[in-house]
Image (cartoon, rainbow, N blue to C red; front, side, top):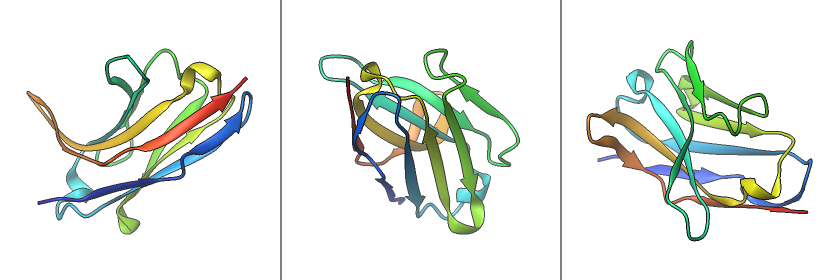
Length: 118
């Protein structure tokens, strides 16, 4: 089994920054691709960013490109999402996920709330 625990969410004004963390207890973490997703009230969960196991390749949703940065520290078994220039439309519960499969990511965290006020 695996456990993913997010932290770092909170309330911030538009234009501000937050850094989300996700500590992962998957035994094979260092070889797992990881991702961040978010779900706003009344909307479906959407992809935000992903990072390959080596950390050398990242992918972003167009809505966050240039503002968000995903990174990982395999020694700390942690991935991060640095969010800058936050907008009210970034308000959502943010989830980290591990090990993508043909049917979606296998492991998920419980989520952390990010609220951006205008």
